[in-house]
Length: 138
Length: 112
Image (cartoon, rainbow over all chains, first blue to last red; front, top):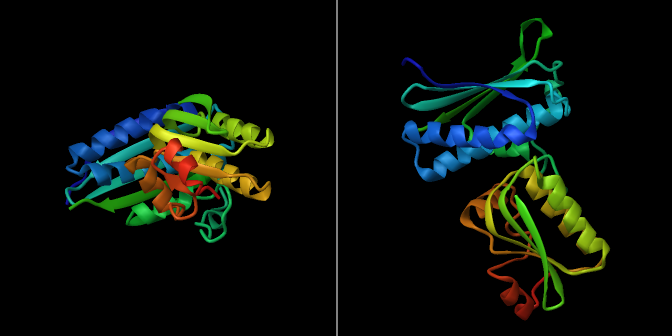
């Protein structure tokens, strides 16, 4: 099934731009036919993924860029995030035990709870990182 | 995000409104910890919060844990459906004391 590109967005990797990501993801999900509840969940997951890039890939370096692509193949939405930060330690990105009550570390859990598939990796030549997420919508 | 501070029934009440995300959650965290440092029992009113991310939730968890450690009372009031869904994702909806309003919460004295 062909994938239609709904969005390709380049944005500064700073917390103040996360609100734009949320608006865009919500509208894209609605355009793809997601109901309000699913749209809100997708907003949460993609927002958390962008936060992880800002905090853990760029480590607060506000000169970085995030590229967000959203595709729809009619039965699933595909989200692809790219950054040009140093390659991250992929083994360190895992959901934590929620029984251990402490601030932080929830983002990865949110993403895995909401999405059907997640894959992370390094861009060729060590020029950055990618995160691909898929959510079935019909 | 907007943040207002008031007192009700001997409790400090922090009213948050708008979107609580990484761009402003450090401010919320700072205010929550400042209230607890001033030895006040604390309610965080989320009735006007339209979105909260994991950094906002982390500020609430830190407040809850700090209050518990200092033997103070801490609770959430006016939790909207959207905020509740984030707390449920984090399995925190059964951890925080949650009430409909500050008045109800104080009257019931169910804070922990």
